[in-house]
Image (cartoon, rainbow, N blue to C red; front, side, top):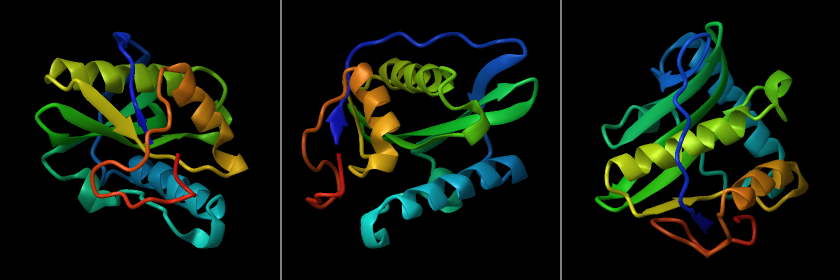
Length: 161
């Protein structure tokens, strides 16, 4: 679990762009299903998986964003407001064919800039500790996140970073 550093997000327009997404749309649901499967497959005994479903991503305090290339959804991530000054990054996932291309970093920077734009001074996230989450941890550490322990409603867990 982590607290973020200061960054400015890129402005994505044209064929490559980041925009709000409808969690109920078919391509978003498919990518989120891949995210849930990945998290379950890489978490011991499938415990401590805190993925938001379609209903959670549709809540008023949560905004889902997607990175599209020529209309194809390649990456998603959500920003959930915990209070007026604290946001959480949720459901970050990049399609397997687009990993290691910088899309995750671009989306993370966009989410962090969006949190700052609404007055959040703290941005947190939770990810796994298993090897399957190593790339995510490296991405987050590279953006200034560091393990801090539980926040919000999360319990203490050896499976959480």
